[in-house]
Amino acid sequence: MTAAIASGKGGTGKTTVAVNLALCLSGPVQLLDCDVEEPNCAIFLKPSLVSRESVGLPVPRVDETLCTACGECGRFCRYHAIVSFKTTPLVFPELCHGCGGCTLVCPTGAISEEPRAIGTIEGGTASGIDFLQGRLNVGEAMPVPLIRALKKKVRREGIVILDCPPGTSCPVISAMRGSDFIVLVTEPTPFGLHDLILAVETARAMALPFGVVINRADIGDQEVHRYCDEENIPILLEIPDERRIAEAYSRGFPAVEALPGMRDLFEGLGARIVEEAEAHRAAAKPTGSPLNA
Amino acid sequence: MKIVVTAQGDTLSAPVDQRFGRAARFIVYDTETKKIEAVDNGQNLQAAQGAGIQAAETVSRLGAECLLTGHCGPKAFRALSAAGVRIYNGASGTVAEAIAAFEAGKLTAATGADVDGHW
Image (tube, rainbow over all chains, first blue to last red; front, top):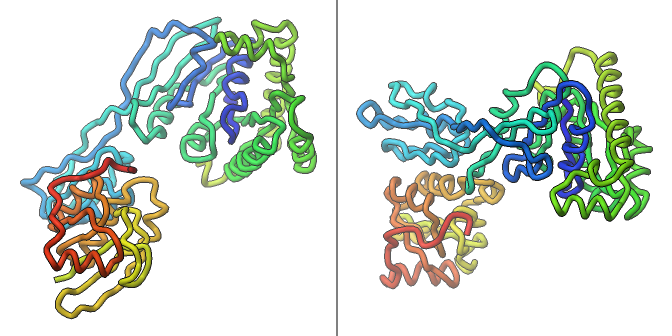
């Protein structure tokens, strides 16, 4: 069972939920930090990272002796990573999404592919958790291929927790895709609600079941509660606005180690997620959204 | 000869748009017929990346030999150079003033990008 922890708004507590949840689940647990532009689960989990592999993207290389400057490659590439002005094409590797389309449309076989490193995947264990994180190279603008490579390491057995990037764009979609359940972490403020609505629309477009965790539940207003109520969205957990959680966080310690009652809360969250995902699986029809293909 | 000027509007009195890839309009000026044509660059304003390259493709397709603009980044410079378009950055004022400065030989062709990408 794979549960993705997402949010829309940044800084609502995705990592807090992902790490504390992973620490409170029984059985084999895998935690993948898919927020590859700023992975931070390791700060709290403190794993010894023993494995490290480079992830590359296939980018085109043009053999000028075979190129007839026909321009087919440039007409195909919607990202303008390869362009031809009736000349041997120019390649802009940093814009290439690695789809391989230019190599396929080239009539003379002048284009081959060579890997361009975009990031690394590091792995290790901590507190019995199998932990992996993607780390995008500094200056790199394309996290999605690294997230995809990281998710190929999702295990079949036990529970897998994915700490997603914030927002509702491509990196989040690629992290959430294929999950059994989405946990949307929000805070009860106008900003939290605004971005929660975007995240809910995203999960619905992907036909994925989801529930909400309200972090710092006693600040702000009641609008998130009212919205969830109106939309029939289950509120899986409310985490209190507790200074000791923030103090532990600031020192790199998870909430379940700082506050005695927290473990019960996150064990309850784990049970709710499994329950909701199984209920959805039982009710689900085999047709899915194209976004989820 | 056709020249393209990046502009914030559709007319000769529009200010020169200092950006190339994300310029609002391209004003195409024919030095022989003195005719102008405004070309919208709206879709490039939305591009996350590659706006300069796509804009260079547009300028090349319009058949221009020279580009008058404010600034030009590294990808756009590479693409325009490959397309055989000479770049005159540092243009300012209105489109008409930029064309007058060009025709008076007051603008010099750039030999490289003068700003980073996404400046």
